[in-house]
Image 1 (cartoon, one colour):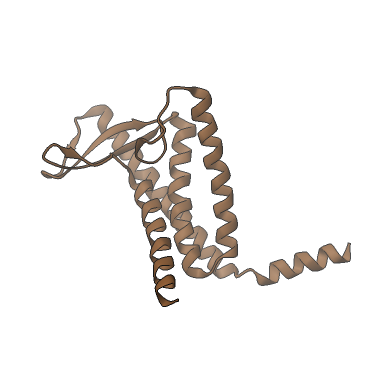
Image 2 (cartoon, one colour; image 1 turned 30 degrees about the horizontal axis):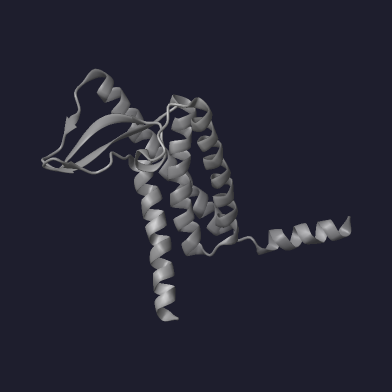
Length: 170
């Protein structure tokens, strides 16, 4: 019993609670910023037309049953729930990474986790993710996306940038 208590105390003493609180604050802010944007666009689109910003961007609600950018969209409930379960497992793994990583990585993983939690919440609540940011040039349209996708993409890009810079130094 003392060995278990000693290992537990050793793990707890290694945790940096200030950076963890900072990290989970990022997660919460990303999640709520995403939720607020989706609530506002859903409310607006139920009453009005899409929002025209300029010649290159508008907000038009699209329900995505796939993963990022509509990839793996399916009408099969079993497939949809299987993907949702895998996403949930990945989120648990990201929490583990946040706990084990340095401050820079904690921030990047927190951005990814906050955005992914927003999209998983929508998958559970609506059985689809509301995407609404439509960037286009003339007839070319990029994949419609949302604020959660922006947080996820920024987190992943920062992780890739770190690895590229680390490899460049070596």
